[in-house]
Image 1 (cartoon, rainbow, N blue to C red):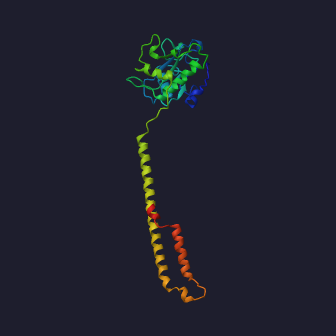
Image 2: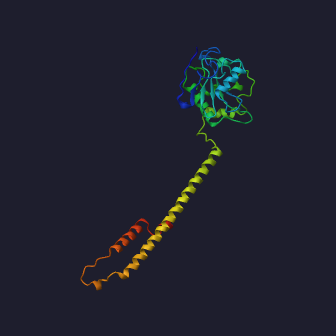
Image 3: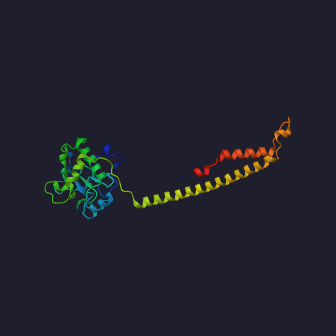
Length: 275
């Protein structure tokens, strides 16, 4: 059994080996070829929805095409995930009469009528191809970006694959994609977040109203205590009437004054207006 394991650090977690789990035979359904026979990195598109999964594509190749497994070596999903689906030591089935000479890389989606792969797909294609061109000496004939070809550019092929404007986005694979792709947020999620925020603001506003009402009540209580203290003043003995005897302040008045001071410290005048 041909089994060539790969480690592609530049892809990190976006590299996933599915050879043992994808439908069909990733190792034996086609013939084994020496890697020295590989002359091209062949780019394809799946010519279908960009939501297709590797398993769904494999099922089409097995059930519709009658192959023993998926015809490509790699699939690249819309989010940039690279799936290793066919061992590179096998010829697979993706370029008529040249399968022993190619490494088949399929970007999931339909890129006819001016459509192009996502930035994430192009970025991952760049990293995958760069790995084989510059960091994998076993592919001795794949040693420059000139070895990167669209399916239709290979000898003897009659196909629009990998799409109408392949030359334009080929440049992005060769040069790399600058900056991360920004996905458009789901409008329904944004609407839900706005509604939640409005509900929270309404709750905060209601709490502020309750606090203002409580402060106003405390202000009224302070005014009542002040009025009570003022009413007690005329009945208190004056210093002239007391002579040299020690002035003893009425205990009730002392408590009232202390309460006034305490309320003014906790609830200074104007605090409610400031809120």
